[in-house]
Each structure stands twice: as structure tokens, then as C-alpha cells.
Image 1 (cartoon, rainbow, N blue to C red):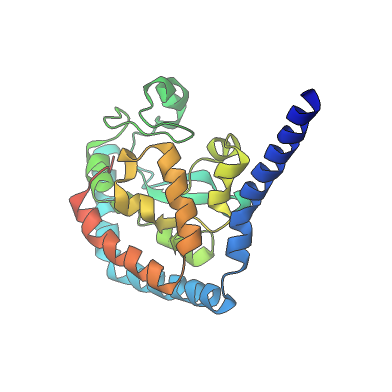
Image 2 (spheres, rainbow, N blue to C red):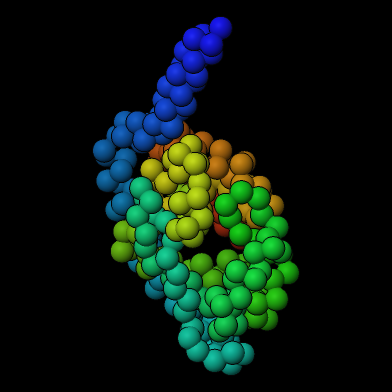
Length: 231
């Protein structure tokens, strides 16, 4: 009986290992032409967007300066593809001492798992609430996309230490570059709990392709204006 249980445990471990590795294999088997097209599209679309959205950049910068002074931008280390850290760019939506209060705010976390979300975070400025509502604070990540840290479509990046605390199955969501939008972004954002969030990101890895990416980009536009789950 004991031997049988040990054998079953070995089988279970092997099955878990296979599950943990499967999404890297799925991504590796994606066509190289698609990966090339995705990168080219990221560069061109992000460059055009930066030009077209430049008036919004200027107005947002002025609003931030008028309410709370500088800096205009907020940078933070996030986990990128294959867990490689990168510096993410955002418009600053919190007061300047917000980072110092992060540990104290942990007990108010409304998200499950390894992410952090608070609907009425007192650290957020008035301007910050508006730009978060319409995802304007995320626009500087177009620079991250041009640099190659991110893609337009891909799992949303979270803090490095949050990802490091994930198990091997959850870490598979970053066998691809993180992105501005994905299934989580168009499906409810912060209203989606962590376990479902992970499953949606893994679903994207299975589904990813030119058609899927275009559909997600088009779905993102009305979702941004509806602002569901944006805080």
C-alpha cells in the first residue's frame, strides 16, 4: 500500500511537471512569421499612437503638475517575459509618498492571489482617479513596447516579487511578453480574481495569433471608455 502511494505520488509529480512546461512548448511552436509580424506591428502601432496621442500626454502632464507637482512619470520594476525584470513607465496617479505606504496598505488588498488592487486607494490623486478610470495612466507603456519590454497584446505585468511568489504553473503566464491588453483587460480587469486571471492569460498563450490580437485590440477600445474594473 505504501509503495503504491509513493508510485502514485511520483506519477502526480510527473503530471504536474508536464502541466508546468506545456505553455512554453505551445509558445515555441507558434509560427516565426507571426512572432515577427507581432513585433513589427508593436513598433509601428506604438510609434503612431505616441504621435496621435501626444496632446493627451501634454494635458495629462500639466494636470499632474498642477495638482501635486512632479514627477510626471512613475517607474517601477515589473516581471517581464521569462520573469526578467524591466522598468515600466506610467503617468503618476498617486501622491509622491505612495510607495512608502505600500506595505501598510497590504492588509486592505481587495485582489486575491499575488496581485494588489484597492478600489478606493487613498494614495491616488484626483487626477490619478480620472486617468486610471480611462487607462490614460498606462499610455507611457507605449515606450516599453517600442523598447521591446512589452507587446500591445499580452498578460498584464505585476510586481517582480509578486510574480516570484507564484508557483510554477502561474509563472507560465510570462512565457510571453507582458502587454497593454489581453483577455483580463477586456473581461473585467480588477473585477477578475487571481486564479481566473491566470487562466485567461494561459488561454491567450494557446489562442495567440494575428486574428486573436486584432480582436483583443478592437475589444479594448470600448472597454476603456466603459471603465469597468478600472481602479
